[in-house]
Amino acid sequence: MGIFGFFNKEKKTVLDKGLEKSKQSVFDKIARVVAGKDKVDDDVLDDLEEVLITSDVGVDTTLKIIERIEARVARDKYVSTSELNNILREEIVELLAENNTSDTDSWDLPSDHKPYVILVVGVNGVGKTTTIGKLAWQFKEAGKKVVLGAADTFRAAAVEQLCIWGERVGVPVVKQAMGSDPASVAFDTLSSAKANGADVVIIDTAGRLHNKVNLMNELKKIKEVMKKVLPEAPDEVLLVLDASTGQNAFEQAKQFAAVTQISSLAITKLDGTAKGGVVIGISDQLKVPVKFVGLGEGMKDLQLFNRREFVDSLFGNDK
Image 1 (cartoon, rainbow, N blue to C red):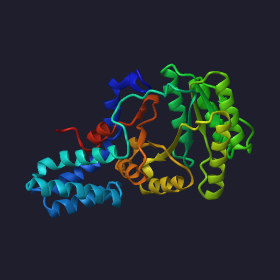
Image 2: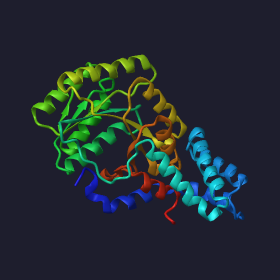
Image 3: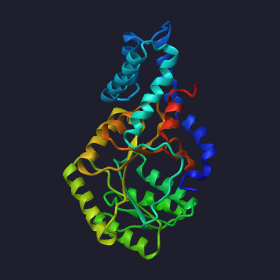
Image 4: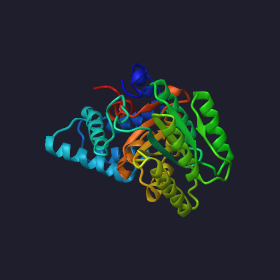
């Protein structure tokens, strides 16, 4: 059984509960759009466009979705409003599939090398360190040997927080003094992990965006130094975003994408917001798959993202 696959029975319940605010908001808006209408026409589509934009899906992604639905309506000649929700779900699932977002419930680490190295990026306050801690716990629960690297040496609090998570989860944290070279921390982390036969390395990084040149140089140096220990590292660059910030998450994503090559996304704090639609828009605009979603404070509330389950939970489960 792959990572995250060992508590799938609980997954859908957690997902439905975590997306409840977003679902209620979207569902209510769509209900108002189709009220008193039998057929999907231009007026319904105009209103649906407004619903998606105000649900933080984003303008460009919304226009893509509407164009897809228009094509379906034109092809089928007549589409009833009762069919609209199912069509909407189908088109969004297909859109996410085009960005390589998964519809599986478990994940197997590559068998050709170890450790598997995840470099985690994101601004301060988005839940980056908490996400790392939860990932570490889930890997450990799956029987994997994990090492954490505290390469956000810009803030003493960041190192302390990661160490607290390391103690809580029961995994070692490689650290240096505040102000140390982050690349040096990454080098030590990978060297320790390699020497001790670790399966997974997760490295935290600074979340400063006010000086993108420094951030770009820092991330570039970290990657170069890691390759001296493990030529294939990092295996993954995971960008953590806070769903509750809505369109600001879009901007953060664009800025990080401009300074480093992002391979996957983790969207946190979905349980506390009605802005769940931001998941769809960010993945579409960046052409990067969503890999994890944070749906609460519990360890199991960080889930491997499944596009079909997410869309069903967001837009209602009625078939």
